[in-house]
Length: 175
Image (cartoon, rainbow, N blue to C red; front, side):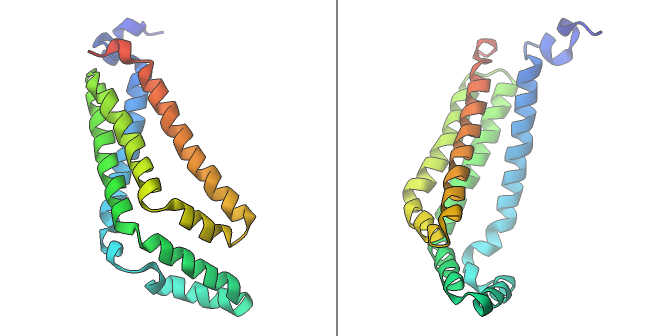
């Protein structure tokens, strides 16, 4: 069994778990940045103009017109804030990646950049887009959808907090 002090990352002062956290962040933030870049052409197209969605809406309208109308109102509400939310997400992911790269090099300021990059975009999106309007519109589709949206938001925050805590436990290795 290899001695932990002979591990290349650990001998440089970076614990193996910090290496794992950074790699997970590199993958997640990098993939999110790429996905965001591919979304740029769709930012200026209303969701309800999507041909695939229109076919689905017509199928839903044939069986339940009220649900189709409620879903269209949800898409219209979300479209009002699509560009600002994209900007918050893209910038947050870039800074998240930058913070993780700094922590990879054991720079403590990367931790604080990471915290800001994880929390500020989510808070701005919630505040700026009037998420309550979107949640209420989705809630019109039923209590299950309303609860699922709230649970999803809580899970996102829990993952953010968990990673912040795990990175924070490694501050003693950073300068």
